[in-house]
Image 1 (cartoon, rainbow, N blue to C red):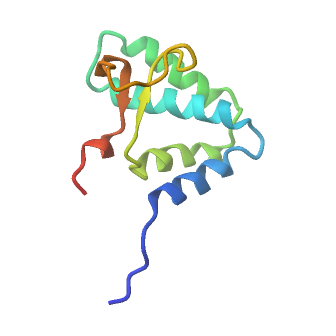
Image 2 (cartoon, one colour; image 1 turned 180 degrees about the horizontal axis):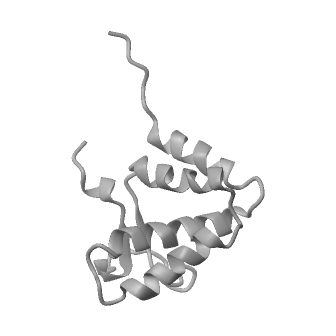
Length: 114
C-alpha cells in the first residue's frame, strides 16, 4: 500500500494562511488561541465559563470572518500540532529551561505518543 506522508505542520500553515487573506496573521493567531483556549477550558472549569463564552462569541459574531472561514478554526485545532505556548510577555520574559510550567499552555497532541 502506497501511503502519502502526512505533515500536520504544513496542513496547519496552509489552513492558517487561508485566514490571513483579509486579516493580519497576528489577529488570526490571537483569535485562534482565544477560541481554542475557551474550547479546552469551558468543559472543565465552570467558574469562568461565562466570561470565556463571551470572549468566544465576540470572535464568532463580530463578522470579521465569513462562515467558511469560521469553519477553518476547528480544523486548525484538529491538526494536532504538538506545541506549547508561554503566557505573558515573551520579550521581557523569554522561555528558559528554569521556567515552571504554570505559565505554559500545551496542545493536546503535545501529550500524545503518536
